[in-house]
Length: 99
Image 1 (spheres, rainbow, N blue to C red):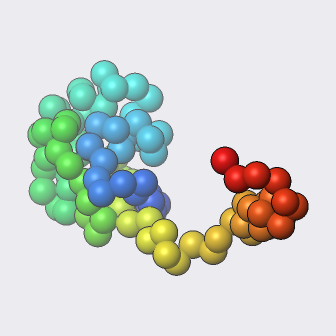
Image 2 (cartoon, rainbow, N blue to C red):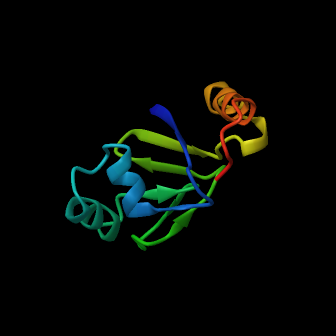
């Protein structure tokens, strides 16, 4: 069974949106048909709700493929954007009035 990771952008993603985002379903209609047809499992259980909220740690299985949901790194762990910081320092020291 092929497994891929999916990094969440927020707290959760709905099941139908995940199937579209990962390419397991080509459209929302296809995702709905797969889900209501009982072809999709979440954590080993058939899930029939296309709007089911999926969170980090859950595993979705469909047609020999698995998707493991992961949470995004917290903002504090991402390095700061140096170019933005340097731009602020330069404008502050140039003597230009602040907005």
